[in-house]
Length: 202
View: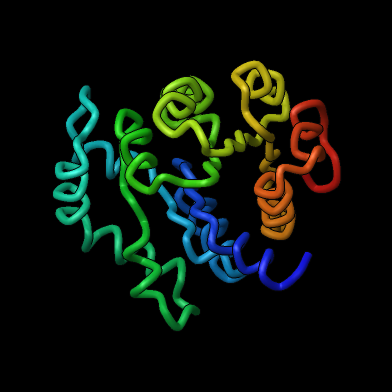
């Protein structure tokens, strides 16, 4: 791959959606450090959900308002995660808080090339959002992720482009995630194989 192609790949817009805040921020930091600076983490977790309307999707304006209300709490938590980063203030602004109903509208604002979506999102399942994502953001690639490899089949049935098996926290998976992101964005055949069984670190 030539330098120009690599540069274009790194400009891809990526959204990561997860309710495990520690995992989310580690993945986002790894992608940022690798040059994927247009990576937007969407945090789905209880302290954010409580502050949102419980049953209706938020408009972009409402999402922005709620995000500002939570900025102090969220920024403090994020800066704790990114304490070693020189541009932590800039990165902290990239975190988007969301409830399950606002995930698709939040992603649609970004118009990503790739969405990495966790399986367990509170009481909901990430793969149930696949049809909405395909309708609202039809050109986005989709990686389903889970700590349970049995969900590969479900993500395959829902039409995901790839599956990422989140291992336990005994080792750093950031390199595996970055390799899979590269493969999916390049539309290589290895991506679909991850829906059939584990290959490499996936």
